Image 1 (tube, helix red, strand yellow):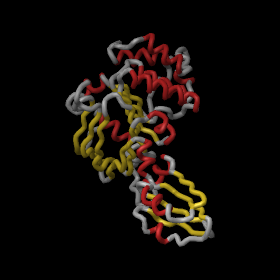
Image 2 (tube, rainbow, N blue to C red):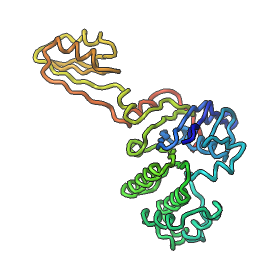
Image 3 (cartoon, rainbow, N blue to C red):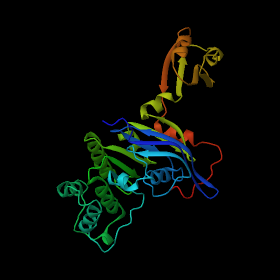
Image 4 (cartoon, rainbow, N blue to C red):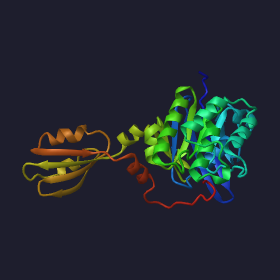
Length: 307
């Protein structure tokens, strides 16, 4: 396997006049992984992907795709990438089959037509139907087939399950996992937390054009604060618990104390061992709660061009 990563961005900046869409994005995506790019509309997800394909030029920073500079050799990059834009424009008078054949020709007909048909079948896509008669979800399926059909080394997917029902979303997850198993790298943007949890090995959260956290979904949950509820057999003074490193007392009523714990539970457990504990419950926040916490409070400058 080549030493270079599938994707690398160092200090990526993109300005639209006075609007700062990307403010120094740093990313490294390993080859063969599924990487989720999480953020709400306007955070900079689409702008980042477009810079990767040289569809727009960054204002600063470095970007490499499969070891290549997309500004110096955009055709070589695009030949190895399957790209699903957030909004795929299709010729309305074509049939699905004609549209897919057109995309295959753009790739020099280096497409396995049998695999293309199998993808359409998996997605329940009628290739004889006219594009103008397709629902939004079925147009999304056309976009997915054209991105996957050449078995590219890298998939860059902007909101890949947009417009699809939950059952079809599961089909897409399986197809992406199969592509990864066959050696492809998958980089997909999303604002759907459950989607990232379902398939991503790692995730980056982008806020206002900056990466604010990067880890596996499980690690993000582990790093977050736990909520702990302790019931004692008799009234206790909770102030010693609040002096334990990383522990805050949220409330104290009757024999019950509610706490918030950052980091390891070891110190709290040792402190509780000296008290008459009757019951203890811990609760970890979901990835969605963690995601929302990154967006709570603070001024947000709208990035009207990013999505």
